[in-house]
Length: 221
Image (spheres, rainbow, N blue to C red):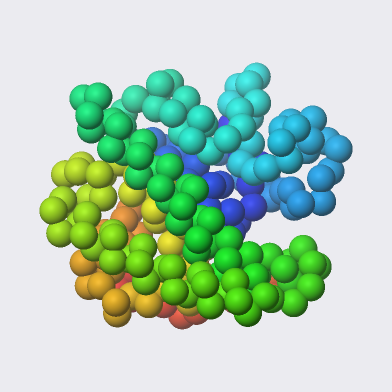
């Protein structure tokens, strides 16, 4: 059995879970409070970050490296397109959501409102929360501009770029930090991806002390 060391509200863990779910790869989920820097977990990944995937006898770290590894060993259904230019666009957008979106939005909203409490690092910084709330509007507008031209974010086929984006947004949606009224195009895209079987375990996540809003698991939100 494959085993994924993860944290439920880690978007990087969710990206791997979505990829594995889409490829119908069975996995045992092991919740890891990675910020506590448990020595046994650090032996699995000296970087001290989730996710870490135990795949057979291998221990794999870094969400994008894991997803690309899975693409190699389980190529169907494909989450990376065949042609080099199309693969580039997927990888560009994966990096956009993993780095820019996470740094400007998720780390500021989730980081301040949820992780400070969970990790016991004090009270939210209102300046960060305000900055994240401003930035998400720009990112939703950018997503809308992409989806106005394409069926999915990187092209006309669903790809790892969609899962990278959905992983970030689903974490924010868990705490009602996405204004779905801002863009019907983005909302329709999220409704499509949210209804996939790969999303079921994510919609069932529960964080003690942080109950999700009623619309979180609603496919017709």
